[in-house]
Length: 330
Image 1 (tube, rainbow, N blue to C red):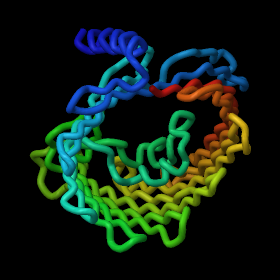
Image 2 (cartoon, helix red, strand yellow):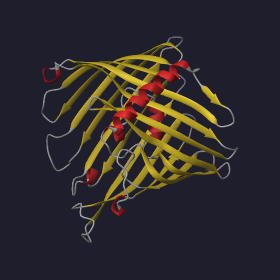
Image 3 (tube, rainbow, N blue to C red):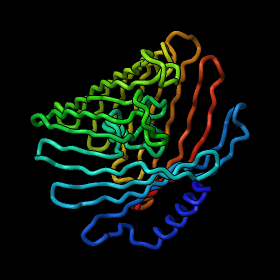
Image 4 (cartoon, helix red, strand yellow):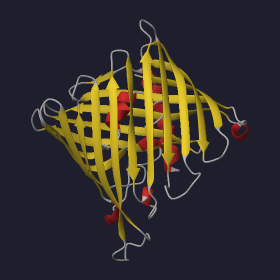
């Protein structure tokens, strides 16, 4: 019942937002923004020929706070379609302190540091997630403490300690805490290289009273991206031991992406390819997935993105589908 009430409230908030200016300014406090994306999807293969859906995937409302010159914060809700019901989560609720021009600290529920850098270069989260997010290598947000240090003009070091469970189902399990560190280099203008290492504990038999059975999920990730004036390319490679808490199951994968904006045109082209093996000890379980699309922007804040997707798991036939993704922000 509570989730149903939240969903109704979220829909009402959407309606109110349409009646507000595109960016509502709250005097002396901050700024309210929003974005949403939904799909019209049609199956093109025998396995999904009956698929014809039209639904929201994500709706975000973000309130950015500016409490002083050095203290800022954010509150963000994430409204997600789960099983045909709009379910509301608190995704971000944090305070950020800029100690100086080189050092910043953040506390609260916040974005994790694994894939945000490469996701920004990809710039089409509304169409598809990064590989690390898509295959649940790490939640996109978690509750904890993080810090960022700018070392010189081309290096940044980030660190984070968090609950490890993500924002969908947070708990206080002592076994699931996550520790991670990331280095980001920008050796030349437009080029970004990132290296990430993370540890996330879990209880092997899900019995907190059993001693000496704690395991660690270890994650190593390398990413690279380049942004030019009208294009971007990039990708990443990841390896995770005890994938998602499955003992002795190692996962590995890589993906690559590209996007190109046609000069003096509201049209951009995009594409991505994913290859992910959830268990390197098994054969025929690897997922291969690619998508291509066209982004048409008829006006500020709106994109209409027709895109074709094809996914193959192991030796099964490819499952093809056609999407029209609608994305707007205000």
